[in-house]
Each structure stands twice: as C-alpha cells, then as structure tokens.
Amino acid sequence: MGRPKATRSKQGSQTTSGDKAISPAQDIFVDYGVTGVPFSEGMFGDRQPPELQGTAGIQRMAEMMRKEPAIWITQNMITLSARQAMWTVEPASDSPADKEVAETIAGMMDDMSTTWWDAIQFALSAPAFGFADLHIVYKRRMGQTPKTGATSKYDDQLIGLRKLAIRRQERIVEGHPDEHGDMKFMCRRIPTTVLATSLSTSTVFCTSAAAMLVAHGKALVG
Image (cartoon, rainbow, N blue to C red; front, top):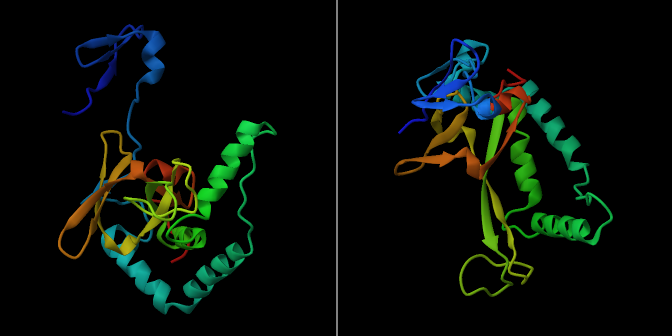
C-alpha cells in the first residue's frame, strides 16, 4: 500500500494526509512534492548528451573509459592522486568514549575481507558514471575462528564491517524511485536473474550533493 498523499487545506491552517488531518505543528514532518528529475524506463533521464542516458549510456561510458585515452588518463590521475591521501578517523572530542568510537571505526577499515582502498578506488568511478554505490555487509567480530560468519582481527562481539561490496554500474538494469522521486532500489543483472537491492543498505558516491537526492549524478567526463 502506497504512502497517502498530503494536501494543504484552502484555509492554509492545516494539512490533510489521506483521511487524517495534520496539525501545523506536524506539518514539518510531511514530504511534499517530487524531485522533478525526468524518469522513464527505469532510469533517470537528466544526463547530457542524450546518448549517455539510461542503461545504454552506462554501457557506452564503460566502453569509453576502456578505449578513450583522454578519459582513461583523467580517471587514472584521479586515482593516483587519491592514493596519496591518508585515511584516518579523528575522535569528536578528547573524551574516552569518543576516542573509543574512533578506534573502533578505524579498526573496521582494516578488518574487512576486501581492502579500504578497493572501496575507495571503485568510489572514484563516480566522476565517470555520475555515481558509484557499494553494498554494506556487516559481521559480528568474533575472532579468527568463529563458529559461524566471517573472521575478524577482533574478538569483542561488536558489529564490524565484513566488506564494502563493489556493485558495477554496467550491471544495472533499472532503478525504482519512491513517490517523491528519490531512488530506493537498484536492479542489477546477475548470471541467472535480476536482483533488486535497497540503497538503504548501500553507501552511494555521487558527483554532486544534489545528485544524492536521486543517487544518479551527471558524468563529469564524456
């Protein structure tokens, strides 16, 4: 069942959501309108030029990254520059609790089945495709010999990161936005079927803050 639509009364003193009235105090919790980004055939259609729109555009960009020297060099420069960065976690304050949180997060970055750099390198494909999303997989930190689940350098029973799993853009078949135009699911083709994954379980990198609204930004090269 879809979310009931909210409408404003003629007097402007209250809002109605379906058959239920919403007081002015509650009005700030209602999501009005849509993002306004064109959407058809399961993909956003705001990319320019038109030949880079939709799934065909994603495939074309992937081919251009492999064959066009200028695009390959640009992407390589971005990657090499990022390799020089130091990735650290700073505590919010000098309190023992904040320091402990920072140490735990830093430990997660170095306790995955894939490396932190693997995730960053894939995230850096966002300037080409306009977006890059990685599926977040958690684990219980139960040491090197757990009875079930993934291994960990730590045995403190805390929730850690198993990996930030790469989800290549070329596998996307279509996306599914909600009634407000915000992207909620991505459908990707795997060998035997099409698998839908929720963006609530992913971390999404986009080329602009506005693109985060739809999880499908504009390519910076092309």
